[in-house]
Length: 357
Image (cartoon, rainbow, N blue to C red; front, side, top):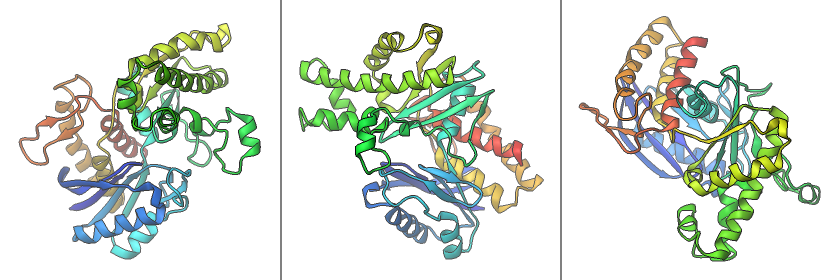
């Protein structure tokens, strides 16, 4: 069975054909998120046309997703007009194959719960800082989804009430406008327009004017974290996103949080995510395969057998982790980053589907 799989992020769309658990012909293209949801949908349709024939489509995507009906419940202005995008309906009508659509944010938190910084913790919060600020709530080792699959939208908490009251955009005055990696780049570009990403910014951290901006941005991070800590009283908060690999950020957060929370909350452990990005394509494949076969016992058996190869993979490189990249054909050598959260998270999401259905 050939399944066309997509992993839609804010920067790139990864895609490929997956057959019998093996990813083949993988590639990627820019998301061009600024062009909006209709553009992304049309890109997916164009790539699908170029990839015919296939038996099903699996999609892992940013945004709040209704996995039962396969559409975007909500997406903020980082991807304009993405809310309401009917991936499942439109793609099924156009290509006459089953379509599975899932969100990958909560699965990353579950990955940290089992294999990463949240291991051994029954309950914790997970936040990711990138184009926006995303989050998840782990309670009793389970993801708390909320009543409409939308819990954990920490980027929308209000940290600047005056901006919220004066603004017209739903995210005016909200956390991610000030604490995301996008916000940092915007703040620094006002001082030095040549610094356009986090790597460049932290390479210039010794410059007083740059360090001052970074410190102000970290204050914004801490402001939101203090609010969440007082609301949830977590034992642990896991911070992810590419920008969080910078040691200076976590050092400063550790130094500032005790000054921002009541003493009864000061026990909270704040850690960087130990895993990284994910094999979203592989997760999309397995979920689509199960859907195509109506979650039959035989389909579950096949998926479980194919996932058994992951057990050996988790004993090489970083023990208990999965790497970023594998060769598509035998010998399936691992490459890239040794341990990535999304890789583990996607596989856990499949296991979760197997257990639930």
